[in-house]
Structure formats: structure tokens, C-alpha cells
Image (cartoon, rainbow, N blue to C red; front, top):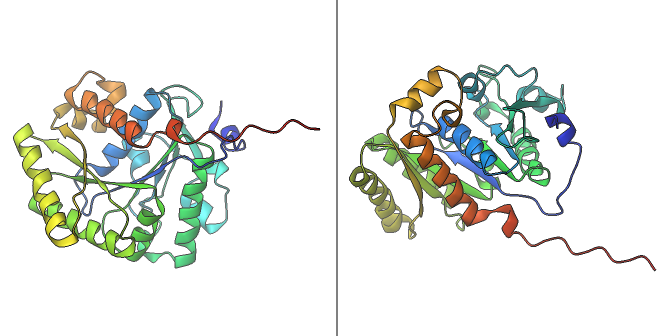
Length: 281
């Protein structure tokens, strides 16, 4: 089934989860994580949409080696519909292991430059995809500017990707603090990426958790840990998914566990089923 046809069919009464992936700072593997999470969920039989929310420095298309004909910049400007901007990957969301990408455009102007109305339209578009797909993954830009936080707060759940660098932890804390100021009830999940060892990942998570507990009065939960793995860099250089190139690598197996954990926390199958239609009299 082609992605464009898939978008014409609204098959769910209730929207499926929209997951925003953030990092506070760049260079921690956020986009790689978003791509690999989308692929892992697709391999677990979910229909997934991956949305590139980093309009100024979009690189999902680069990491996957795809060449979208249209992108979100065209959608926001009114030159294309959301349906026309779909790029299927590995057969698209109609195939097991395939998913659909809604690409950004590198160099088209940053998300921070958008008006509040345009940002709102982008958020509505991403959320509306939950009517069609089992899961929407929204790869956000790095930072804490107002438009970014609007998109983050519009999601059902936020995943903050961190590594052991001090700047990663401080910027992740800043993101969580600003997010909670905008929406106090939101409790993002933490993903520790490129961990050298279990002890290091525990230290990284505890440091961020303690800061949130001390200053924000809550403890974010740990979604999972992905170990440092040279095959991640190999897959990025080859412009393909790690789960396609090295499915038995340590990082790939860890990502499959992360996807399963996310599904257990907020799986579409856990949503109440639509009420049965009444028989006509």
C-alpha cells in the first residue's frame, strides 16, 4: 500500500500516540534514535509515521539516503498537501518493517522563524497523523525556543535523549524545565544513548533524575539505554537503518527492547476500542 493512499483512509476513532523526541542539544544521536525507533516499531507490526520537525537542519532524509520530492516546508507554505509529502521507507507503512517519512528541508529557515500560527498548523498536522498511523514519531530540533516547546507540548509523550557529556545533561535539564513550565503535568522519558557501560548509563540517568527531583519536584522515568556501538556510525555512513544493516548488533538489539518498552507504556492496542455500531431499525 502506498503512503499517499494510506493517508486517504482514516481508520481510527481515537488518535494514536504522538511521541516527540528531543535532546536539549545537538550531537547526542537524537535523529538516529528517532529513525531507529520508527524502524523498530515498524518491525513490531506498527504503522509508523516519522516526522522531521527540524526544519532548518533536517537530516532524516540524509541519514536514510532518501530523496523526498516534497517536504514539510512545501506543506507549511501551502504548495503541497500533507498526503503529497509522504516518502515511503522500506516499502512504507503498508508493509511490515516499512514506515513513512515526512521530511523537513535543510536550509529552508529554522523552526524558530515560523509564526505561532504556522507552528500550530505543523503541530495539528503531526497530531492528525495519529488518526491514520499506529504511532507518530516527531523528531524535534535541538534547543528550547518557543516554537519547539509548542510542538513538544502537543505530543502525547516526550523522550529526551542524553549521553554522558555534561552539556548534554545540562541542556536536557533545561529542556525538561521549560517543558514543565509550559505544561506542568508532562513527564518526559529519558533515553541514555551511546553508553560506555551500565555503570556509566546509571550515573548519567541518576544525575538528570536527581536534578529534576531537586528542582522540579518529579523524577523522570528511564525508557532505556543504548550502548555505544561502532556499527551505528557504519549504518549512518551507509545511509540506512541500523536494523537493516546490522540487526544483531548490540545497539540494534537494545533499540528493539526500547521499542517494546515504549509499546508496553503506550501501545495503541491499549486504547479503548470504538463502541460497536447500533443495528439499523
